Image (cartoon, rainbow, N blue to C red; front, side, top):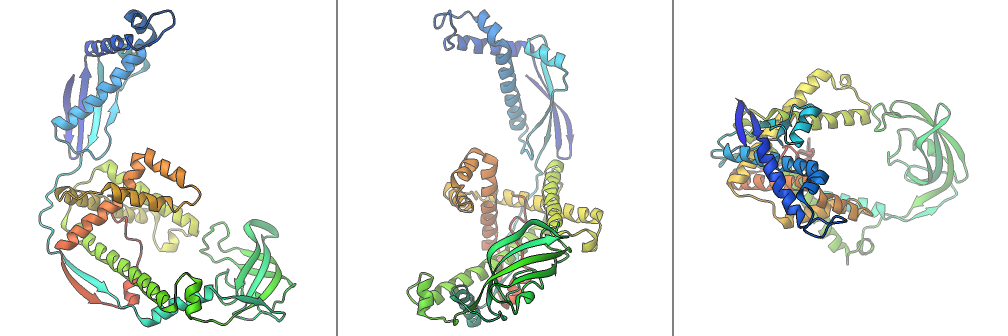
Length: 453
């Protein structure tokens, strides 16, 4: 096997590999000899099948298998001999027509092909201690606990029918059929749907037109879908709903007591309050952690600058851009609605993709240098959490991940990322900063996935 480097430009490497036909023939012959003692063919006793006969039956497929093995060995040799860290799987170019391929398989020609690689950039991590972090701390107010308890009590209210007209605060149970231009539209019908008047949970104007309704009424409600309605095919369109009012119900008294606690599985109201407080504290802590993580990533982004593997970058941009297009399609928005153009948006999101890839490489290097790993137990917990998101399909989802290493790697990546961030946080200079709840959740968005780890 002869391996010759033909290109070393930036993060790109190319090699030419030549494997003599004789080497392939020798390995194929050895494999056929090994088959002789194992294969079972009618008319021949075990171990007595002539190699020439095996060659006629299986020669071509054995050579193909040997070629595949040799290619794998050559790729590993290139990586090991040159101490390369690959950014992507090697791209192989055999540059051969059918006749050339046939010549190789028949042992009449050497195997010759090109290997194109992209390698990970090398950079010095240096000292990441002392990054200045302002850790936000928001106190959980009693009013927040009370508000959560009231919401919980409202969800557990009992309702009783009333013969009078519906007023704000009542619940109206309806059947409806939605139409656009007189024709029913998909997803526009419902049966025994509860509408709480004043909740603003339906299309604007829908609930208002149910005020004054009584059980047994037939109504036509006319509304206009919001311009940015989640279903783009309905956004901004006028619609009518044929409504049958089946019941008007009045809520019972809102009571927050031990009975509420027992209704939701606790011994008393005090136990419920404690659980609610703990849940709110976890929400606050998670929001604070997201802001801390963002500060660490911003600091790393400012600290490091290096070339990125082109294919890795373009794949990440394709992922980001696909998500952008999906969200815009679902919302019915255009680039003009966002006061930009597609060209400008592409440039902005390309920068985001570059940041994600760069930070992913930095975190990977810090993790490797500090021997940070995701344990099998941590990966299993993440897999179980994912499986629970698909009730009724647990077995299928479990098998999907067990049989797909790439999918399993995508589960491990955010765990690894968070562990590296936690490591850096342990080295940082942290100053607590008291802020309000509104400040804590201001511009709060899912910043996990900031990197393409």
